[in-house]
Image 1 (cartoon, rainbow, N blue to C red):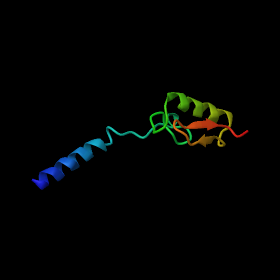
Image 2 (cartoon, rainbow, N blue to C red):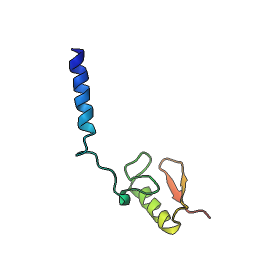
Image 3 (cartoon, one colour):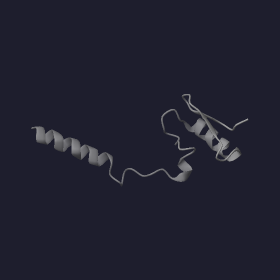
Image 4 (cartoon, rainbow, N blue to C red):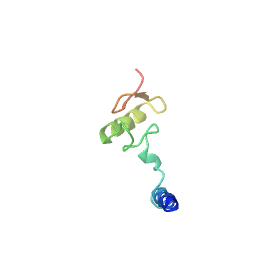
Length: 74
């Protein structure tokens, strides 16, 4: 019985991590390392991140709140 449980777990794990189902995010799907579906992210603050990245490339400040906030240094 234990073998069946381990086999079922392995099968479920393999189906969750199969390369056909999991794709790396495209560069346009990331902003300062965050994607729109990450924890403490949503479409609005993802757009805010993209705007800040366009305004001050490489210098975006990430304010650790939930949802995350993105600003350029003053």
